[in-house]
Amino acid sequence: MRSISVIGIGETKFGKLDNYSIRDLINEAGNKAIEDAGIEKEKIEALYFSNFNGSYWSTQSHMGALVSETLGLGHIPTLRTEGACASGTLALRQGWMAIALGLYDVVLVGGAEKMTHQTTLIVTTGLASAADLKSEVSNGATFPSLFAMMANRYFHEYGNIRDEMAMCAVQNHENACLNPHAQMHKKITIEKVKQGVPVADPLTIYDCSLVSDGSVFLVLAATDVVKSICKTKKRLVEIVGTGHAGDAISISGKSSLTTLYATVNAAKEAYKMAGVKPLDVDFAEVHDCFTITQIINIEDLGFFEKGKGAKGVADGRTARDGIIPINVSGGLKAKGHPIGATGLSMIYEIVTQMRGEAGERQLKNVDIGLTHNLGGSGATCCVNIFKGL
Image (cartoon, rainbow, N blue to C red):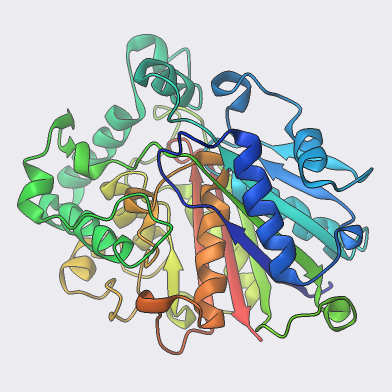
């Protein structure tokens, strides 16, 4: 199988970007990535674009063609991917497979979402479409309520970890304060999280990820052609492992609420392909749509034993100076969650860190990084592992 590397990255700021249309977001991040790669646009042979619900929120479908026209990519083939919040890394996987199979040498992978211009009702209605209409949404369920069920079941099986959940939010907010692209530059405390506006018990507003606008693009290339096409001399970051797995769309269809088997199986595939174990990973960006999710994720990824993830957070092992730093970008919780761009934003952080370009939040000695991107209530998952060359 061909070696594939990330050779270019581009990202907008995340947040409530009133002056940006979805075309503006695409234009900024896409051109940044191509410029960062140091290649001519003519070298790009295909485009894979992630967008969750622009058809509803922006009344715009056929987005692959929209992106190609916006960026001036000519007559290349385009494809839009959608897998709820995992849409971004599904796009990455499509681009990776196309190069691995020898169809192309260079592809552009991107994602964008424009959400904040809509009312809360329209945004939440769009988000709910990633849950099961028949058994959940039609009965009043929302994603906060579904993940609150997970939290309460976790409390039942492993003990109350309310403080540790709050600590996840505190850590991620601290990290986001060092990220100029993050939406939320605001430090919080455990008590502030617990005393926040109730959303779905035990979750408060500070346990929930943000509604965001934003865009991220990556340029992927077969590693063996990079020297002949790139003008830049930045560190190459190779995709050494990738995994994709699924589960039932509904909560009731899952065999567990405290182990998300889509994560377990996607991680197993990625670790095997990369030839590494969880202890080999230097840092990770994981899908913290809610604080309970981060704790379940770091257990399902093998960083901590089941039931011990909360203690790992409490002991500081997931902090920036811990043994396995988690979400040094600020995560979905504080960097933001523009759904189509979210999974690619995790990869943007991995590459930025491995290049040594992360500024105040720069980690030391990072050579292997992992991203974990979840869709719905654990119905879709992609795990990717990266190695600095």
